[in-house]
Image (cartoon, rainbow, N blue to C red; front, side, top):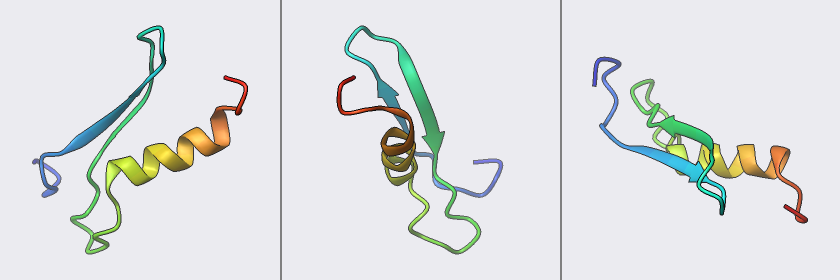
Length: 52
């Protein structure tokens, strides 16, 4: 809220409960595609193999 973003976030959790990544909305700059689920999907594609 302090960054003038909407109060939404996402968290990516492994099967064992470990928090792998988390992010929040970054839409205050005018780009309304900056939702956390998109950022976490990009992070997962770069950092998690299909074997994990």
